[in-house]
Length: 394
Image (cartoon, rainbow, N blue to C red; front, top):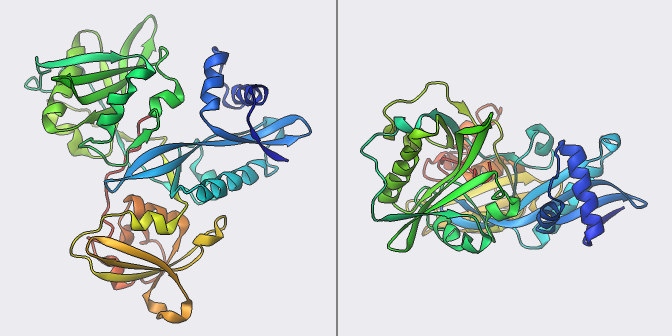
């Protein structure tokens, strides 16, 4: 039986299940409970025994420079003795359908196993490169402006300027912004993360979120979790601030979606970069909402047809027409009799999600498919490939 977890006793059962499933030690029950309360969690029960859960919460995500409401999927777990019985499948279907009915156009998650979530229509959305460098590798001409004040953010009441920056960043890519922001949702300010806010004349201009990696008794490595700035001058100061860690930090690691973001600012950079090993996955919940929110290239004036099958959301299954003109799109479902077969591009919901977010160009995405791509879909300005990095939490 599936039901929503609402009271304290049920949520604490979910916390205990997380300790078992994720091999974590919950050292602060009150904080763990607060984090669980941020989620809408459904549980699969046998009598009074909680066997599996799946949860979600609301945040916002930049996709092609537009801010989308997004359902974040989390707390997906099954008791080890109860796995491979389809409980999570039922819960995931429940979450996806509910969030679609609540008006969310898209969903995202950060999984251990990508293959598992592909079965639910999710597709890889992130293409970030992990850079490793010393603070002193940042070119010396980048300095922290003396007119800039740096604040150490430690309280939830101080999140507002962080969100102001996050909504107006120059380096948007595919960024995540929560109601109280992603930092609050995970509760990571308690000793694990440091967030520094940069202000010029009391105006928030940049922030950086750092995770300190402890080696022995001294934290001498840091990972940059988020790197956000509103203009190029703010970026210069942010890099200058990181350079100031030269005396006590030996290594900085940072995941970014494009090389130009950081390499030109360094005197030296290692050549052993790796693509992010835990990238995000996304899934379209509402085709009409997703594609009508995109701003299209002014030169595009086309009518495009695609066919998709969605095994969970039947409303998405069928043949769709995109009528694009004046930088906007009218999206409608049509009957098969209305169009010529050769004009239809057949896609999975996974592939359609990747096209929306800019993970890959259409030709690259479908190059392994034995099918013809209609000429209209080959326009480079239609859905251009874009840098993607949904990296706020990790």
